[in-house]
Amino acid sequence: MYTPSQFVNRDVPALHAMMRMHPFALLLTPQGNEVQLTHLPFRLDSRRGPQGTLEAHIARINPHCEAILAGAPCSVVFQGPDGYVSPRWYEDPAKNVPTWNYVAIHAHGRPKPIADPTQLLALIGRLTDEHEAYIEKPWSIREAQAHAEHLAQHILGFELEIEELEGKFKLSQNRSDGDRAGVLKEFAKSKDGGVQEMLGLMRGLYDEDGKKR
Image (tube, rainbow, N blue to C red; front, side):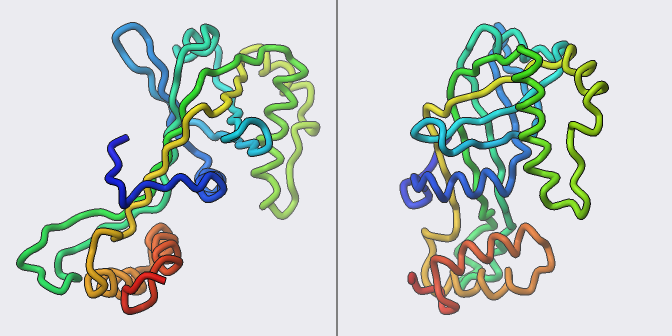
């Protein structure tokens, strides 16, 4: 991922926190001269491996399975919050162009397939429990055990120990204090959830005048 030095983030706990907040990511695997892409929910286990381990599952008819079973190198792209930035918000709009603030994280490694039914159901259960934790009456895979066991025959699980973790946090680090103050002011007016999350990240770096904390 092309990342100018001022936008690089190597803080593993911060990257993990963002991955957990945005777990629906993009899996990329090679297939001949092409690249297969599929959007999947991932579960991160930060205790396994220096940079964490990802867990997910896909349908066995998915072309990704060939690469996963072969342990081919793959990447997982997590997209964090983002927000459009207008030149109008800068101190000198005539000498600037539009841009975009955003967060992106790329995790790279070699997948390990999980086909054993017991291990696969346990993996699916962990992923489900993590997201059901926010539901008023959490659902458990145990409530549909027989149905889940049937579906597991058509699913391939996998885990990916992260060998390389790239973080890009483009938060106006390359702008003047006045320019950043303008972006903060306009982001604060937005009702968009992603922009508000972006605003929170920027406020962690700058005060309202755009000065670095």
